Length: 469
Image 1 (cartoon, rainbow, N blue to C red):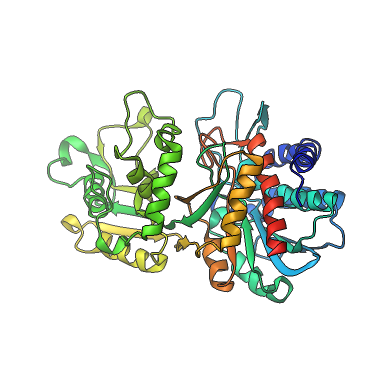
Image 2: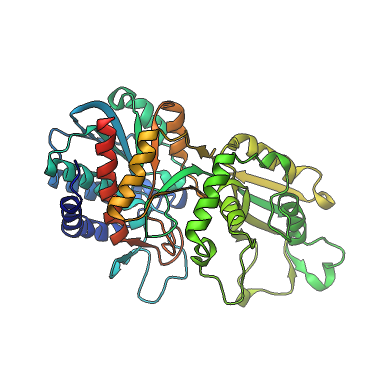
């Protein structure tokens, strides 16, 4: 049986001595995912992150483990650690070591590649999303060995392209299918937490359609005093087009084909999550004074974030900076759109619908160009097995002294949908450390070390229960 105090002591010491230092060094490496660094193959940052991880694994070996580094030319690498177990089952533990780009707005003294620890918060890009996962997975298994607790065979799989939609992962999973074998439990440490008070289990993930929408109206810019009122503004045309997707008053995504019926179980879970979080459903975000969320009902906010499509504008081109702008009617406007999709909506079908809506009968005959990223289909977890439901609650109460909470996440982890298809009989524990204000992908991202320690201890309990079913 897992000894709570012994587990906590082992995990706390291991984190402070053997995990925090390499994460600090990892944060210094600007290992941006391929989608954000076209020169990733020659820049050397991915090789540096891989080298750091491999050296650490060698310094902290697991008994009998086989370590595989696979790096196919033109593809990002993977790390696979095959750890023998005492139980004839297989658990797959997942994480990634690529990062989102810098983003502006970091607090003075902080930066994406500048690790700064303030109490339990370790600031810098990638520590929480998701650099800690490799180290925490190894720590959990070592904690079990420390107490002589049997566990199933464990395969730790770390990829380097998750932030780009995991384009290389299906290739590697197929390539190593025989080595991975049949998986009956997946533990993914790349998700969120509603607060730092208890274990959060992710029940669904939204899909994603990313597209650059460009509207051209002229071959070159012209004097606005001469052309305005005759030449339609490219910005206004673009605004008309996106209004086909989104109600500008409410933010509701309009097309029926981009909506799904929300399962009643997920509605019930959203109600419990909203009750547990209270105003933290929205108060965790850095709203300006006087701002309010998109809905007054906390349950509807949870469902908006987890089961409804939502449109964000993440980049623009064609507009000069304010200091160099002039009275010119510009020839084109382009924006990057990020459309989150309901978990059960097919990503490619959604992309085709978006393409049809934006290109059909453009206002004034303007030239409309679309450049899509690879679409991602969301994921809806299978119903929790009774043993796992009980284990999650027991683990949370053991190490957080509060019950576990189940809630969908608004982000996308393409790996989950793929694994769900490849291992249809597997159970899933999708969790993570991305709690309030941790701000993954944005400025001032931090890893909450205290929460991560307890989460690592929870994994010990879950793996023990998995082995005894």
